[in-house]
Image (cartoon, rainbow, N blue to C red; front, side, top):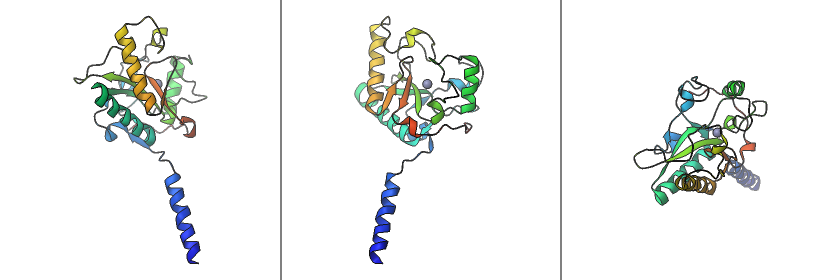
Length: 200
Ligand SMILES: [Zn+2]
């Protein structure tokens, strides 16, 4: 009997530690030095409409933890920080974006769902100590070939800044999108479900 109780206890703790925390976490609550600039909560975005009722960025717990680590690395190594434009995005907002720009190079087809809809994608850039955005060759949501991370015809400084951002994000489990220098998917995104919880 005693053995059964011990065995149960071991299995229970193993299950507990094996589980991943899939909750959505407010990025700024985890690391207040990550600056949020939610264009989709303003009219300053490609749709020219307010898409989010609140300027808050959420990510799945593990992705948020890794993003905070990338931010720590940038602070220590380059005296830079991360600014985040977007993270979790409700599926209904994805459908609306697709109705305006149905081009899979820049907006994920809502029929398949975006990694943003899973809370597993972050749109980020670099800022200096005074909060100024670094030159990255294009602005966020620049839907031209120039936004491709491997695009050659940008300044040396912008190319170097893109490299720093990629290096920091890759080290902590993010993969850069081929068409947008600012977009990074969290490794293992496919394990997370698509959500349509409104941003509050
Ligand atoms: Zn994105």
